[in-house]
Length: 106
Image (cartoon, rainbow, N blue to C red; front, side):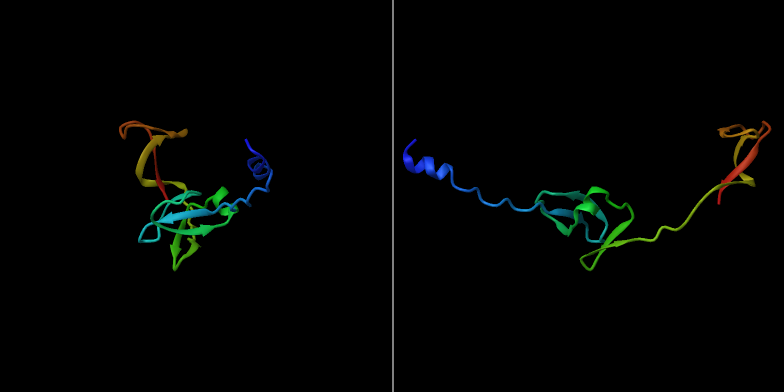
């Protein structure tokens, strides 16, 4: 190692490039995957918080991340037709010939 190489090694390092967080999506705007790598395909840049905890019901519309409304709730209710279950335990499915209560999602 000569003197020039020695002093070059002590020179300040270049500033690292800040990381970029990306959401890749298809032609319909449906998300494909989140990545920090430069992969071919359509993508939008997102912030670290969105990358760390990605929302599940989203679309990319006009180059922006849009969270879809999902305000529906379903619950099991007894009904005249449906899945026959044990009268004392809804988690046990029984044959229709046995005593049962029918349950449906509503």
